[in-house]
Image (tube, rainbow, N blue to C red; front, side):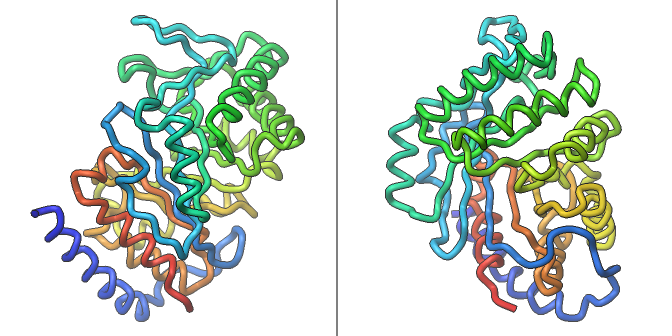
Length: 314
């Protein structure tokens, strides 16, 4: 009951934020990046086995909707996991997010596509998931083989790159990931690819090297704006968005929030005000949320708000 009431309150704030954004003319423009709004919503799901299903998440038929399975990791699943040099294994909640579940949700909703995300922060919640190839050639060969098998078994459409820890230099990362995307797209195994960087010197050095050499293969930038301080203001968020749109120039940088409120610009502090303003300036490439497991206890308020916002026409 509390979650339902909270959702009603949050939805009323969406209308308020829509009105408020009409008078926010103090943000710097223009911004770099792909011009024009997109009605794309993306949701990470499956991490930490919180028993969340596709059917729990609200789906607006008037938008593009991507579920992103978290995660496939090139580590084994032993109690003390070891890297496997590009041989990926499924670590998402495959009991609730199985091939049959994916086929079912896609048959019921023609606007849904499903991707898998690589690596994430940790393996089994206790060990960092390092990018640690033995060599470029062997990693790429193993990754193409293992991921092609998983993608075909689960009837997936795309891939997301979310390595956050590295035991290889930026150029090695760029070549491994770039060659992987080249082959998967050339073989028509995937139709889209995204990356998920955040503001950290080591992380940015690796992803910007990838972007410089292979940015043409990357359809979306799921920048983790929620990795910034949880006291982020609207004006700070807009500056961060401008900076990252410049870093990944020409790319579709998405706005983002973490549903647990752990960081970044929260809805309570104006996230949807900022998104409305971006949309009014033809700069909203979409919204993604981390993640469904934390959203369930809130009644998926932010998912509903995000999707409603994306359907607004300017």
